Image (tube, rainbow, N blue to C red; front, side, top):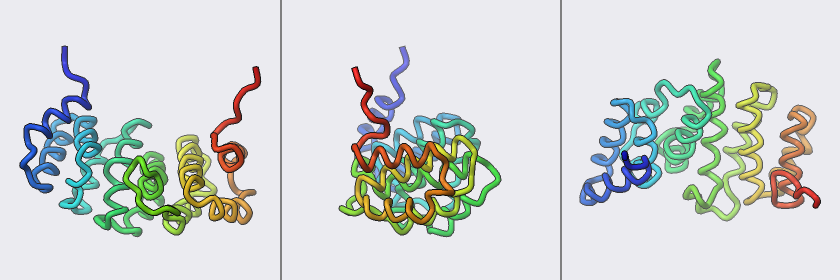
Length: 201
């Protein structure tokens, strides 16, 4: 039976424990190039340090051909968002994602904000990064593609965990342009700490 992708990635990294950041990045790029998309993402999840050697063109290679919700979210959380947080790609590059005609690139721009704010994704700031997160959200306020709307909610809810005041101010200024779903989920998060209220027995 084949090993699960995450376990395979960990085994590969153990076998290359002495490898440099550039060498680990090369392993991930080789995986994406050979069609092993999720292996590439799992290598980056387990060894985010590899992105210290990445260039913009490398990050774009990790996105090549992404056409599913799961692929975009892995790309945003384990490649683009980490590279953005650590300065390997710029705000301008993320703005390019957000301006794309492709729904998946626009979703990726919002998902890339998650590593700016989520401790579980390596964020270290106690208050997150409201400036960059809300800049992306503002660009996509009027986007009604379902995949983008769901990512908008995720981005705002993740920031709300670190900087609820910034999210409240954003809702006050732009709430009427957000979908009812986003408003509801973000307000629930601010009020209860949950995306949806607990169901009553």
